Image 1 (cartoon, rainbow, N blue to C red):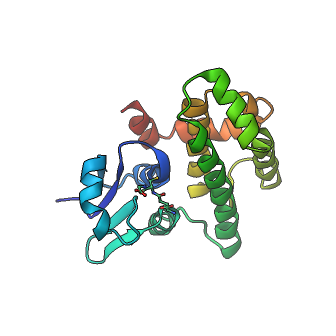
Image 2 (tube, protein in one colour; image 1 turned 30 degrees about the vertical axis):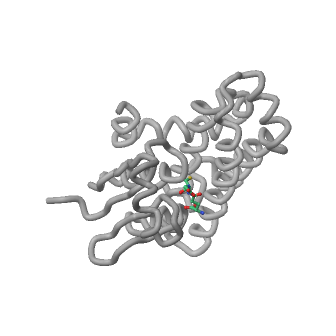
Length: 200
Ligand SMILES: N[C@@H](CCC(=O)N[C@@H](CS)C(=O)NCC(=O)O)C(=O)O
């Protein structure tokens, strides 16, 4: 049977990766459609906000906005949090990681490591403190999961931002004093579905 959902984005992690991780973690089948600039330019005017990502949902149509898509998928696959408070806790972490991700994205095209370091320090105020703050939040919430004492999309969002830090920024010093974040990252990375996905 053809996959029910098609997630459309460019061929990089960016604003689609959290949704990809949710779907992969849940072990669901979906089409991970990655298009190039030319294809994008041809379809742009048909997109709700002329931007990607979009999720084409069988029987509904097109859903836009990366965090809306990810939240929809988290709810669908029981990864949004069980209570109102757990959901809000998860949203808080996702928003924090999203903000960090945007700021990382802006500097990640600089290839010279020294130049990149300079840009990070100049343009991302308190970027190291952000990981310290997340470590503190995780500790306050029991040290195991970011929200509601169970795995949620907030943990996947943390995994995603740490991957961005490792792969695009190449400076992991911000995680030096964050044992709980590192431990959570390892637990998420070692889940069978995500291990398989990362190996690809
Ligand atoms: N708020 C939107 C932003 C989407 C966005 O900025 N998409 C970019 C790619 S990361 C895009 O489609 N750029 C192409 C363009 O605007 O021409 C979201 O979170 O989905």
